[in-house]
Image 1: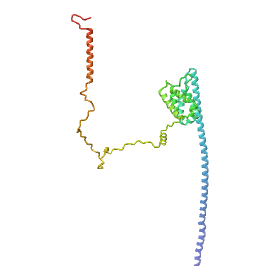
Image 2 (image 1 turned 45 degrees about the vertical axis):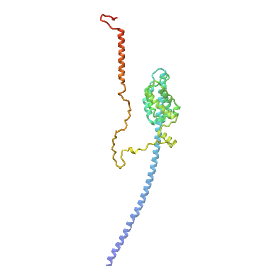
Image 3 (image 1 turned 90 degrees about the vertical axis):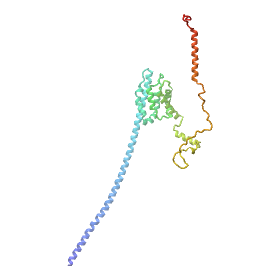
Image 4 (image 1 turned 135 degrees about the vertical axis):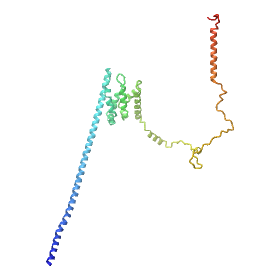
Length: 312
């Protein structure tokens, strides 16, 4: 019997010894695995941040390169347009001196107006002395004639939105050319109107006249803070339509005025029945004149008798 009891105890101890290392091994292994995974994640995140920084640096460089490339393209385009405009103006001057039709500026007018409408090129155009070329285009020819009406009208309309400064006007003859067009007695109404608008605009810029009326009003208020205000008369309570005696919201019923006068009212106009009729006087005068004329005719001709007396 004792032998049988000892055997199961030994078996239980052996089972416990076998189970202890099995349960402890996975705990240490899991902790080591998690720590290694965290380290790997940190390394990957650091590597990812470095890669993003490098990529951003390359993007900035590419943007700068594109910006410089765009500026170079714009400068080349403006330079080519200005050279073409200058050549066309010189060719027209030579043609006018040789008594030939000056059509070179008209050929590229559409291209120039489309270019001047784009606000992107305005600053570059003015920096590269574009106002000098515009003054050359609008100037008089050697024989004293002005450019054609389509050229003047199209070019003046195109340069209305250009941010021209006093320095640009001083360095060119654009203002002189526009003033000559405005003073031309044979100029059309539309061209004169646009030229007048440009002259007024440039004169405000030269004399530094403020055109924003809100700023002008604020300046006046700052100079005269105590502006006398117009006093409005107080409302007459007797003329209010709504009765307030009984606090009722109904309108008052108008009362009929009694025309029981104690004194006869004075007449504002004279009695027409006592006044003579002017038309009748004029008719009587005409009748008298006709009678006088008839008498004169009778005296001149005389009365003719039956025998033929006073015929001649």
